[in-house]
Image (cartoon, rainbow, N blue to C red):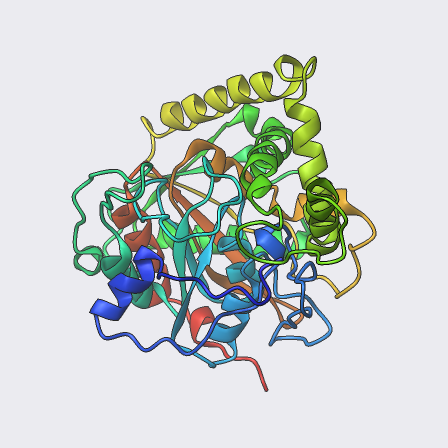
Length: 391
């Protein structure tokens, strides 16, 4: 849809990085309109995982994660609507942060689901992640969802001292479906955090089981509204052989959007349609509130939560393309965080037969300092983030 479109202005995050003297070397491949978990929904080509070229790098920001893992760049940016920074970070063994909703300006970001989208960095390690966050964070009057919260120096919190920290392990994230090797790696990482002085306690987030259903009502509903602007009139693809305005719009959307984007537009339009709005969209918003309250309640007892980032290691290219539900389940550990609008960090936590495993650290709203501190402390006593694929 936007193949030949050249944006007339930069995103705020790009301007902020330019102001710091950053050198932009290119745009990364991704799932079309950020809809996917493998980068196989790209309008151009699938991106391959540097650790095993027969496997996916995750998605939707698969190109961003693969470029960092392959040493093509020091860091990259991604957008995270349901796990699109953290899941590819885990599958490519790099560090990825989804900031609190409103911490980083979304001005200039192509909208998918406006109440869920957030821009964040993918980097080699937590120190680089903190440096990029220092550059891109802050209030932006051009973004109505931007929050005027003071921006700390995220590098100042990077110490190896974990004494007195309370970490919760939600039992709902370690259920049937998680690969045994992933479970073992995360349990070993939790033990390492305990050795560093953190106290560990099991907690419960029972409404997590509904997060997948809630997400696939809210996100497609917002996408169906946001993507209505691609009508062949103002910018992007315009079908030239139509005989009327309406046919032009229909043909533009027919040929301009890929199959996954069209699937989600149809799902969202259905959920918002007369007679179904209350049954689906309104109910999903109510459950979303319950999920957020549940996180708030747990965070009264602990400083952060530890979970797997992805329930599996990278899967084969083509393995899940014929089963959208299995693809959607790849983000089951990351979706609740977007629904609640809170920050989460994915860091490398080991390998299973040469394939990466990622650990997710979830924090309170605007507590990026806390989760970066935990991630940094873990990386001071482990070498997983220093491993590199053979290219």
